[in-house]
Image (cartoon, rainbow, N blue to C red; front, top):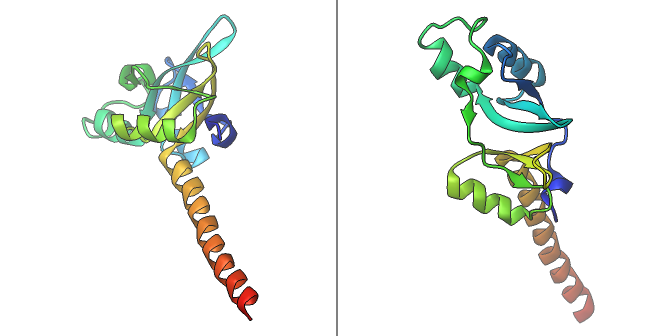
Length: 149
């Protein structure tokens, strides 16, 4: 199973000149905890950073800076880890757990943003698979009981 098959393709993003206030409003509107910062090169949307709700609190609200003046480019976490859309689920889990990140932009080979995969997405998918295993065990027991009668 590839990451592209399970990632969220509706990515909320802003360019680096957008204000922190715009980012906060988008997070509220879409009920999300982060936005990607992107730039367009050669007609392709490339992820260059991320701003999380924690960044808003620590970098802007706590020091009482003006969210209407600060830009997402000012506070974004640059040097994003990315994952290729053809990578497997366990590749994403290893990368995320190894680097301590909860979100990964999913990109095409040339770096174009196609989606986002989160720790929550992976946990939900894996818990569904574990439930399938549990149902398999139950079916196996019922099949044996029916066969032995």
